Structures are given as structure tokens and as C-alpha cells.
Image 1 (cartoon, helix red, strand yellow):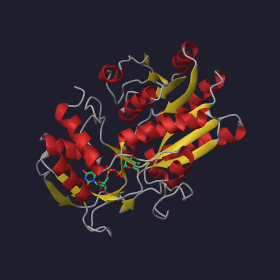
Image 2 (tube, protein in one colour; image 1 turned 90 degrees about the vertical axis):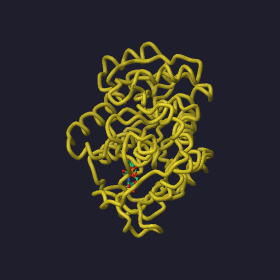
Image 3 (cartoon, protein in one colour; image 1 turned 30 degrees about the vertical axis):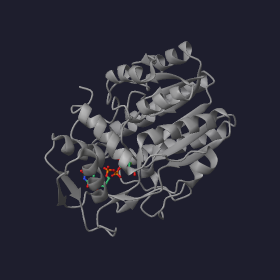
Length: 337
Ligand code: UFG
């Protein structure tokens, strides 16, 4: 069974390719490398022994996308492709709306032309509004989102939901990721932000490897146990396995569902710094800085639904997340360059 991964050379896409292959699926990748590297395909070959078919295309380009479906019998699609930088989305909202929504519409139209009725979508915990009660479960109120990136995720969820309502034989899973971190245990693939990282773990990794001087801890006056922000960090390999479970679910035509992919456990910024310092063997330097606009104090999942219905749960903890991030970062101090 062939599974198409849009954005399959990206951070989460590449890790999912490994787990799909291990589960016996055939992987086809579509990626325009706007935020990823062709070297990923070589690394995936080293890990799996397979060169996955690659289409270097923009998913919004329907003509190019049709060729993928003409040349492969695609059983299901996992749609990872999209812009994902929260801050950037505030500066260039139209690009975010155009790119993320256009590519999804094109993809779904081409899927319909070729009779492909199974879709898994990369959504985000960012769709939960500030008013939702912790831990966030899938029934929690969504919106308003604090940035255009988040709105694109919520709008796309709505588009897929409406389409599924209108097409009874369509199966979809919306996966709401919490904070994916870590890397494949081989150290061959991992997160490779283009510029200065925005997210906590890749930032800490750069401080640990010496390419950034120290971490700015954004706020220590939140109503949390140590005053710093609390998030639900999930190992990217666990997250990838969640996608395999979701693909199986849509292929078995069980319907349309939303699942949180998180651990259910909140970790503070300072706890993360401590765990990373232990993993890399030296102190990660940090300074307390003002709060980052738009941040919330706490965000963590109720992850019971995915366990109950998909039979999926996390296997890796904070020490494995830090160990594998450090393994990747120390072996690839400049990422895929
Ligand atoms: N943080 C710092 N210093 C940094 C970076 C982050 O102290 O240099 C703190 C933040 O203030 C926050 C925590 O670390 O408390 C996590 O921040 P991230 O930027 O790593 O992650 P966010 O939770 O802000 O955002 C992430 C993804 C979004 C997604 C959201 C879903 O980046 O794409 O989770 O909840 F929408």
C-alpha cells in the first residue's frame, strides 16, 4: 500500500517515513524543499535501505500533483506540507493563508479526481483557544487562534470536516500535535531550522553545541510550579508512530476523527534545560528574559482518546528526547549542510 507524504522530507514527515516503512507501507514523498533538504532522502536510504520515490513539486501545483497519482496507486495521503513559523505568519499572513490553504484544496481536489479517499492531516494544539480547560481534550473549544499560522490549521480542519460530511466514503484523521522534539535514534535525521530557531529544544541544542551563546527563558513569572512556561513535549518517533496508527485507521474506513498527539505531561522550560544539560554533559547557559508575546502559561494534552481508539501511546520520555536531540545536533552541528 502506497502512502503519499506531502512535505515528507521535513522534520515530522521524514520520521514518519521511517516508521511507515517499518510498518510495511510503501512511502512516496512530495516536497519542494522550501524548508527541508534533499539530503534527507539519502539519510532515509541509510536508515531504511530504501530510496523512496521523490516528487520535487509544490503541492499547490495540481498538474504536477496529478503526475504523482498517475504514476502511483496512492492508498492514503498524510498532508504535512505547509508553512509553520508562528512569528513569520504574523508578518506575512497572506503568504500563510495562500500557501497552507491553497495546497490543501489542490491536494483534496486531485485526491478526489483519482478516487483517493483517505487523508491524515498535520494539525496542531495551537487550534485550542486560550479559554479551553487544561488538559486539552479533543472536545475542548477551538479558537480564537493567536496567529495566522494557527488559523490556517483551524480553517483546514474545517475544510476537511465539511468535505468528509459531504462525502460519506471519505475517511480522515486530524492530528493535533503538541510540541514535537528529539530526533531519530540514529542521529541521521532531525530538526534543522533554517535560521535562528524559534522553538525551545532546537534553540537549546544550538546553545549546547556552541553555535548560540545562551538561551533566553521567556518569562519566569507564569502561574506554573517554577514560573516558566509548561508544554507537552513529545518525541518525534512517538509522534511518527501516531501517524502510522492514524493511517491504519483511515484505511480501515473507521470514519473521521480528531486525535491529540501528546504525552499528557507538562514540562517547564527550566526542567527542559536541566534534562538537556544532563544529556549533553555540560550546563546549558540561560538568562531570564521577558515573556514572549502570544505565549500561554501552560499547554498539555489529554492523550486518552488516541490510546483508546488508535491503540497508540508514547513510549519515550524526556531523557530520550534530550538524548536523541543531542545525538543529532552533535553529529550534525550545521544540520543537513
Ligand atoms: N521558550 C523559551 N525560549 C526560547 C524558545 C521558547 O523560553 O528561546 C519557551 C516558550 O516561552 C514556551 C516554551 O519554551 O514556554 C515552548 O516554546 P516553543 O516555541 O518551543 O513552542 P510553543 O509551545 O510556543 O509552540 C509550539 C509550536 C507551534 C504550535 C504550538 C502548539 O512551535 O507551531 O507549539 O501548541 F502551534
